[in-house]
Amino acid sequence: MLLATLFGVAIASCLCYYFFIHRQSRSRSHSHAAAPTTVTAPGKKSKGAAKKKVDITAKYAAARKDSDVAASPHPSQDDRYVYRHLRGHQGEIRGLAVGRSAHHVATVATDGQLRLWTISDDDKNVNSARVNMPKGTCASAVDLSADDRYLCVAMEESKEVHIYGITEKGNQSFLTHLHSFPTPHKNPITTLRMAPNNSFIATMAKGQDLNLHLFSVKGVLIQIIPVGQLVNYQFAISSDSRYIATGTKIPDTKVFEVRYTKSDMKSSVASPTSTPTVSRVELLTTVKGHRRGVTSLAFGPPSHGTLVTASIDGSFAEHSLAVRLAMKEDPKLLSLTKTEHENGIECIDCTSDEGEGSNGEDDRTLIATAAGTTLQIWEGEQSDGTKPRLLHTNSHAHRGPITHLQFTRSGRRFLVTAGEGKTATIWRLPEPSQ
Image (cartoon, rainbow, N blue to C red):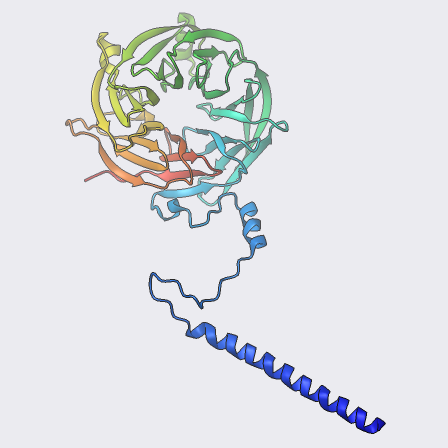
């Protein structure tokens, strides 16, 4: 009886094992055969297609490693004019400054970092010096001195301006904090400029903080200039440090003249390294041409005597100040170009092929405009009266709207842009149109 029971248990075990192995084998063979034979017609989704597994951990690890990772390839990667991307910030870039040559680029972001990028001449390396702001704070604007010796930043919360010295060892630049000073602004400073001759620092806060402030490099308040009506947007300083132009919600652009003490002006001619002293700033003229407010503006090289302005209505204009400066006549509107950007142009800059040292006779003017994610580079009006022509467009230059752009002024000729993202991009300049 016992033997019969043991024999029955053994038979049952063998049958269970056989059915288990057979079922697993059928399952594996079915799954291996189904995938290769599934064909999906273009534009139709197959019901039997296996879903691709996504490694979520790897996805977000890559995003942390590369601050500019997108779901699809970065559109500007395919642009033939892209020279390189500057990545490293973990927050939105709030301020951008470009050295006169392509050696230095400075950026500040909401991650509380100040970065000074050093681009080597061999085009192989890009190094960055990093300064971490106190926890919970960040800078709202940044600028570089024309001689690449100083860097200044405006703090968003305290409205203070901090000055750093720049030193170089090999291909690496280093920042040393020199001093800081308070400003009377009520709103965060959005435009910060150091005069090319290092004689003053100017600040403007966007919004209803309607005064432009001038300080010495040491932080002594020189003058408060009431320029805004309704809202201030931006200001620009000419490369010879003689003029300041302001853009506001009013269509007319005010141009101010910076006056220096006569003794300092004589000494600066005798010794180019000396810094002249500002005596006062006076309203020089008003530039007209737009129907709506001026959001951004920039001076051309001194030899050109031009000012470019961009408007809320999506147009940009070229103005000649040479007639006003030489003959005391009103500025001349050279051209007014209406673009397809009905929501307005956010920022504008201009330069010439040969930079600020050219004679201005044969070199062309280049104008860069940004509206949303679209970057456009134009050739300005030519001496024969040919109107501005579009040289290049990139509709997705950045992942978010472009908020800053600036040309280099001498040496290697580049355009640098930054948007509502974590990356700044350096662009080569388009070839002349035929």
